[in-house]
Structure formats: structure tokens, C-alpha cells
Length: 374
Ligand SMILES: [Zn+2]
Ligand SMILES: [Zn+2]
Image (cartoon, rainbow, N blue to C red; front, side):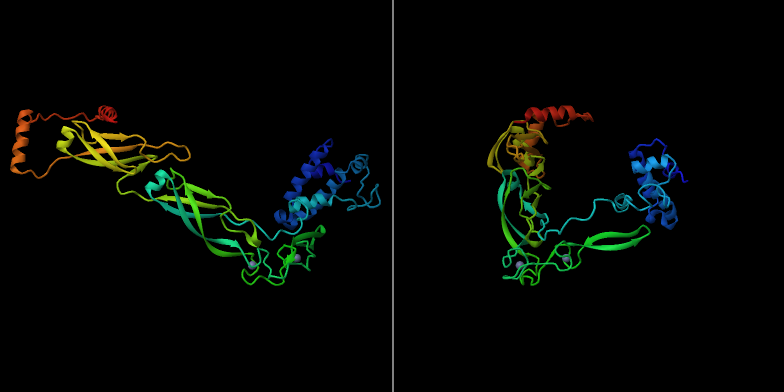
């Protein structure tokens, strides 16, 4: 008598769960796709062992020394009677049973992505923008069902509306029933006898639409604005996907954006920097007065609070940082030269000491810039 426990590689006191697990593992290893024909005999042995050991009454008989699968032996008769076919089917074909009924014709449309250029002022304050998109919309002629007006879908005669067909395949296990989508109706269960002339039965047509997009303050290159259900309508007039508008910020001529702060460079004549002055600076918020104190240094930063880009979805704004660029005159006439020489004499600077600055001025410079910031 064959040792079924040995065939499955389980102890004699193995639980039903252990037996099932061992069987499934072996069945997978001996699958014809894996083991080829060489595994066939062994698989039959394994299947027979499982047939016996998975049924409590047959296992009991076997344990008492009667092989329930032997011809004429044991209750329940021979191999194959009450055989756990479903288990084999699941092991080989992934389980889940037969596919369910027909698939609906209407499916959700795809999401779409469009790019939109905005300028710095729009990113700073937010904007309302019009956007033209080419997309799929529900066909007006058939209202999405794909049929010529006055006609309607008919039940598929090949699958009787089930959307799938059953086929009998032969394998070493005998005949196996498989289910596949119906080719005549692509699984829909219905066919369109007379397609709509405007959409060829698709239920949707391409169209150009104009949308209004609310661009919130603070958007930056890469920011995506989601417009729910403004993407393309699905096949069969299915629900529309979403439309994403991806922002690309155009560079500004004078302002450079870093996060929500803006930076610009302000050239100031040497004399104005030394004497101090008040300037009108054209910002995104209109002219702003800048008060340069006497002794303003090259690279000094004047910060105008709250004149930067709006914080996205948060309120408040970044700052505008004005970097002072002190301009040294290059062409002096005679009189100007005389005046500067007199100034140099007065300040004892005709022959300045060759005193080298520290290579690490960072702390001092940063501190000075901080203190001079408004
Ligand atoms: Zn149509
Ligand atoms: Zn069909």
C-alpha cells in the first residue's frame, strides 16, 4: 500500500491545514508549466494522496489499513469520485472561479495633464485664467450609448448576454472548463447593431473646450491644480476623469524667486550710498519708497516685508529683498577728480594702508546685513 503521508511529506498526525498546505506546494512544483511532463506521474500520486488524506472518513479508513482508492475497496468507490477538483482548479488557475457577468460599456475616462505658463505677478497674487483643452466629451448625437438615434444595443447572441463563453480544454487531468471573454461582444454582453454616425459607437467625441482656472497665489513651477471631472469622458459616455493643470512659472526680468521670497539688485551711485538717499522702487505692488542710510555698503540687503510671493493655500506673503550694488564712477572729468582728491586728502586716504581683510568675513558681514535690514 502506498504511504500517502510520505507522498505528501507530512507526519502521520498532520492537521488538515498542514495536509492542504503540503499538497498545494507540491501541486505548484509539479505544475506542467513548471515540471513539464516529467511531473505528471508524480502529480497523480500526490493528487491521490491528497484525495484520501483530505477527507476525514477516507483518511480514517486508510489509517485502519484500507486503501479507499483501490478498485473495489473502501466506501465511496474509486479515484475521482468526490475528488477535490475545485482545489486543483484553484491551484492551477489562480482561483477566484469563473469571471462574473458582462463588463459595462461605460468606463471612466482618463485623467489628463495640461501645462500652463504663468508670470510672476500671477504666481504672487493668484489669477483667473482661461484655458483651452482638447478633450473627449459625451457624444451629443447618441448621448453616450453609441447607437444610431432610434436604435438600441442588442443582447449578444454568441454569449446570450453573459459577456463570456465557456470552453472545454483537454489536459492530463481530463477535461477542464475554462471561461473567456466573449469575442463577439468584447465581453460587454451586448452588441451595437447600428453605431452612431458621429462617434462610431464610441459614445464620445473630441472637442475643444474653454475652462476657467483659478490659479491660487503661491503656485510655482511644478504645482498641479486639480480640476475634478474635467478630464476626458470615458468610452461609452462613462464618467470623466480629472484634469490636472501643471504650472510653469516664466522667469521675471528683474525679480528672482527663491521659495516665496523675491530678490532684486538695485544699482546705487557711490555718492548716494555714502550720503544716504531715498529711492522709489517699482515693485509688483507698485512704487515703494526705499530709505538708504548714509554709509550703505555694496551687497547690503534691504528687506521689504510682505512684498514677496503669497504662501500657497496659507495666506501671508514672503519678502522682497533688495540687494544694493554700489556703482563706482568710471569716467571722471577734471573737476570731479579734483573733488575726489580733496576728499581723499581730508580723509587721509591718498595712500591707504595695504591692509588685507580676513578671509572669513562671513559672521561680520551677515550680522551687518541683518542689522541694516528694514
Ligand atoms: Zn454618438
Ligand atoms: Zn457576447
